[in-house]
Amino acid sequence: MPLIACLCGFTEAADETLTDHLERVFTPADMRGKDGLVHEETDLLACGCGFTAISSGQLDTHFLAVFMPGDGISRDGQQHGIPE
Image (tube, rainbow, N blue to C red; front, side):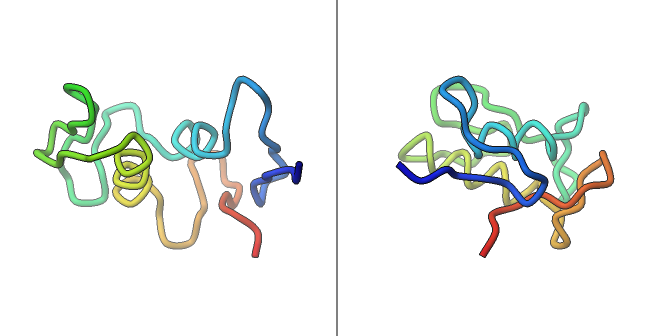
């Protein structure tokens, strides 16, 4: 099974996926996305901004899209993302 890693060196473990890691490093404390709206899961597969997903993966993709900056640099000053 191949290791799934982040540009920062993080590798998936049984208790934390790459998506979990990326959401942790990019989600701000106030849950405000790049669009200025609050993005937080309010109901099953629903975001506070009004977005409704059809799967947990789609909701994760939504959160990463609104929180992750284009350059992949998080608040810790490191670049995060999936190596090519």
